Length: 142
Image (tube, rainbow, N blue to C red; front, side, top):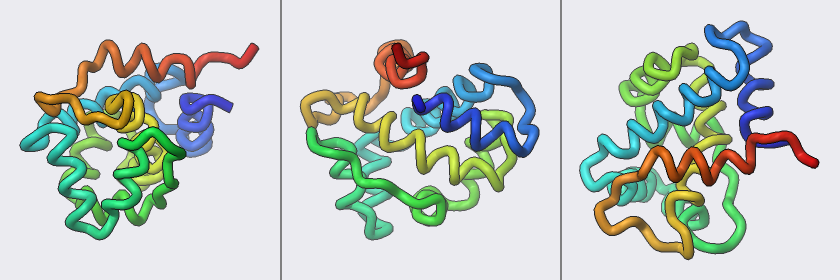
């Protein structure tokens, strides 16, 4: 099952606004926008996770090895209520759902944004290239 299939499954049972790929794309776009709005971009996000005791987790996403999982509660703790509400609103999903969705999306997003274990120099994420890189995770398996 691809990442978007997982997101659809998480959102589908609760009747979250948009159908299919629209919701998934909205969640990814909202997450990208949030990261890019951080002071320092992805470096700021990394610092935020480190400040909440999750440096090892996010470092695994940046590195070239396996991505460590993160729980919805850990995402909520690292990002805070204000950010979670803002991301949920931009994505068109309920605040109750967004931490679960982000716990699945963020590891892939950061991983694809940091090829070869390197944070982009300007810290911003290029939405087009990230969505393209993540697209292989979302399509049907052949």
